[in-house]
Length: 272
Image 1: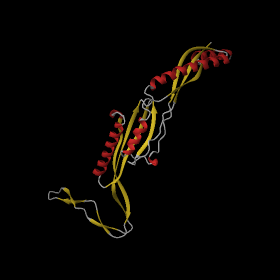
Image 2: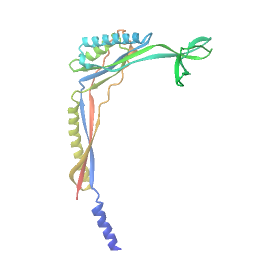
Image 3: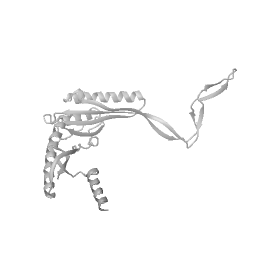
Image 4: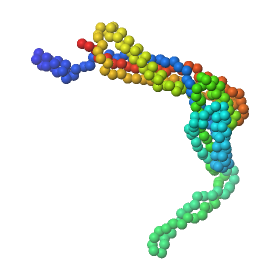
């Protein structure tokens, strides 16, 4: 019995040797001032009588918006289209009297002299719509286009962002879906955060090892988690009378300071 127990213990140590490790997680926080603003705005045209009319109105207003924001200092290459759509608008009408209604063309099957089967199209028939019946009708066309506008170097162009939004509103934009801020050197900021996070993790690992009465060995692995800045929320500028060509006042939007956080978990072997 003793021999069996000894063999089992040795087998567990040789075959199923457990790794003795310790993991500590550190944080690196970097505070920065964004230098780029990203505006997402657009134009929607509703109930145009024809699809062509909807597109013509849309293209005309988008062209005016581009020219207006470029006139205040935004570069053409910083204006891009993020969405473009055209769709019919429908409405249900309840019939109050018997009215003629066109039905879809039908196919008439016929047998030819050689025994083959063919078909011929019968012209659309006119059938009455019953009183109380719901009839789906096209009442117009909707066209929509969204623009993404980047305003760079906002620290040295303090009013450019606000002017760009105001001029877009005067020129026909009737949608503003949000304004966000970002840094052009984001990767360099992330690297600074990583270094701080690793130093923090190393310090915590030493404290944990000291409290546990063990010695740290080599680093066997690590993981990283990036917590980005919270984007600036959507701005209801239209409700303030600044959209749809109404003129309106110049909005007051500032970037402020943002903070990014990098979390790094570092795993050490524990020395025997």
